[in-house]
Length: 224
Ligand code: DHB
Ligand code: MG
Image (cartoon, rainbow, N blue to C red; front, side, top):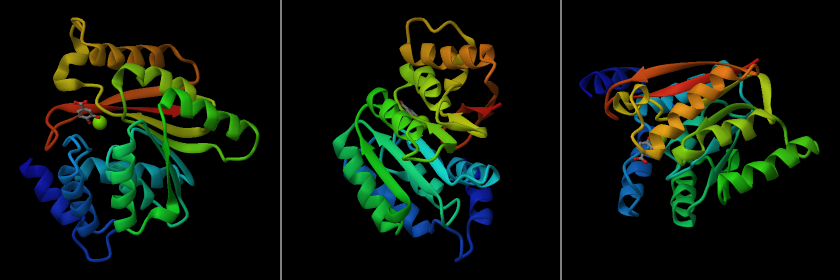
């Protein structure tokens, strides 16, 4: 945690950095005040997502699991012209996210779609297929862990070649490498790792992380 604070403090301290530290702090305190759980990505993880979006030159970003919009705010600052589409199942979370994103001045780059990912993503895929919506270059999956693979599978049809799919929380304090013992979230993490490994359309890696959000990790996969 001290390393996170040291490095983030130096690498995201200038007045011109975006999102502003005020906007980030508001999103976290407002989310807590509104009763949302403290499970957003850390500041450094949020910045990592922003930089990944920059690396792939993302113009369209898909997020599954908005919560209070903390990672959404990060992704929406990856480019002045980026459009972030974020899917949230809980109406209260979506409302809090909208107020946090509005406070950050990023409403024009963001849309929050309310509904279960398993219902909203097929509709998005239809819109992409019909040419009503552009393909995504970056997808961030951070929702119910049981459906990790289903979200990757649905996202694949609407992600450009060379695009990137990132899944949060797959390491789970090392439980990824142990028997799931009936924990459906671990089963969801193992399934997405194993299925991506078998899928000819994707090339993936698990990157373990430690810090403010304890010991966890991202699965990062590039669409071939
Ligand atoms: C949980 C979910 C998350 O997406 C996360 O980053 C941390 C924890 C959870 O459901 O406990
Ligand atoms: Mg998460």
